[in-house]
Image (cartoon, rainbow, N blue to C red; front, side, top):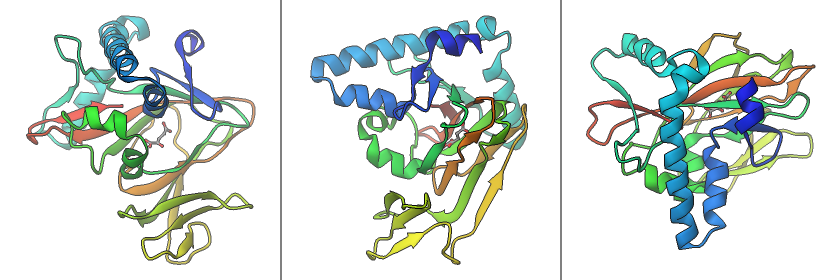
Length: 245
Ligand SMILES: O=C(O)CCC(=O)C(=O)O
């Protein structure tokens, strides 16, 4: 993936990278800037996204947005699929991004979209003018599979206001503090089911990443894991489905 070598931005924990920059990394950059800096960074980002959308088909040899939209239309023919690309180049969001998780270290820790909104409020605030952000749906296509590991694990426990992610315990098991103050271990608690999928290159996975807690297991073996993905959300007027990341 030549383009990832050239343009990728490291993920916050530096165990992978993405193109364009992920929303957590952008949010961190915004948090660390004063008001003027924020405005400049956002303007630069929206400009970059506009270019990304313009050059995508020729740069990557495939109009992926057209292909993905045509596929989603088969599932829901009544709702047009769009992306946020304003003619005046303001407030553009990529329809998806390339994500690379480095071999032996990369993975995505436990997360769900509804919780990310709390963590990266600055980014979501801007986006929420255009998209219904609650209960975002995740999609990703596997471009390069890990030799081992890299599975997507979803837990049956849905997000609820007041849950707090505790981070993995000393043996690496994900725990959550529930609104009543009790702590639940997602790996061992019998009330929580889990499912792991290990999709092959070319597979497209669609799942309730907004509501369901999930993680991507550490990549093992001699090959990075590369996916292309983003989220689906309803437009404010519920007339379209917007792809964004
Ligand atoms: O494998 C990927 O691209 C990450 C999927 C994911 O964790 C998400 O959509 O929230």
